[in-house]
Length: 256
Ligand code: G
Ligand code: G
Ligand code: MN
Ligand code: NA
Image (cartoon, rainbow, N blue to C red; front, side, top):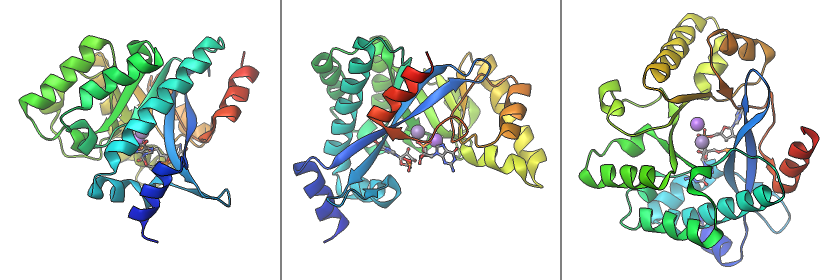
């Protein structure tokens, strides 16, 4: 069976699941947000990870229904946690360039928010730099439309694309997520470069009044370095791997 067939099948038979990873305040360790990450659950309970199917879904167009499912399920789950009294901060959803540029993207977001009753200010959309590379009026209209609703916009994997800072500064963004490669390489001989890049991104987000989130924190040393650079938020295995919804509930219950 081809992956494309498997994706069709996963949609029809409800085989997608979301796992959740916390974003934390690096000073207090408290949860500031939660990122939803998609997987396919096979009939034998094995998980298939997005690296094996997201680019295929993008190529064949199935990313549109898949993305809609992700958005709806993430908003539904966020609303459930909020009703149960857990302050999850924002729920963050990854959005592919192809979804973001589709005609009815904004209408889709509005309809999911209405359906689930989630406060738009609770939603953050993560888009990669390449997703913002088409400088069209339509792109600006979508960004401002989201902004007007109160939905936050984050740039994911920041530092790995080729967009110029002057280009990025024109967009109404809320958050920059420092790509995990910079954080991981802090341990290597090349750390002067990573050090400089991370410092520059943090300085830039301060002056643009954006929030900054460091991704892929795995060690106490990496955490210490980021704190010394006044990085306020982070995410990574050091705090928690992405986990199933019920495990995320337990994690929140334990931290209050
Ligand atoms: O855990 P991780 O393997 O979950 O994710 C790998 C990659 O897949 C990341 O780049 C992430 O942004 C992407 N990804 C995860 N979930 C989604 C999703 O729901 N939609 C899209 N478009 N990308 C996702
Ligand atoms: O591109 P995006 O940032 O959305 O993807 C996040 C990806 O990074 C997911 O695959 C997630 O499982 C993974 N991830 C999250 N934290 C860590 C970490 O501390 N180390 C590593 N190696 N991967 C991580
Ligand atoms: Mn992401
Ligand atoms: Na990222």
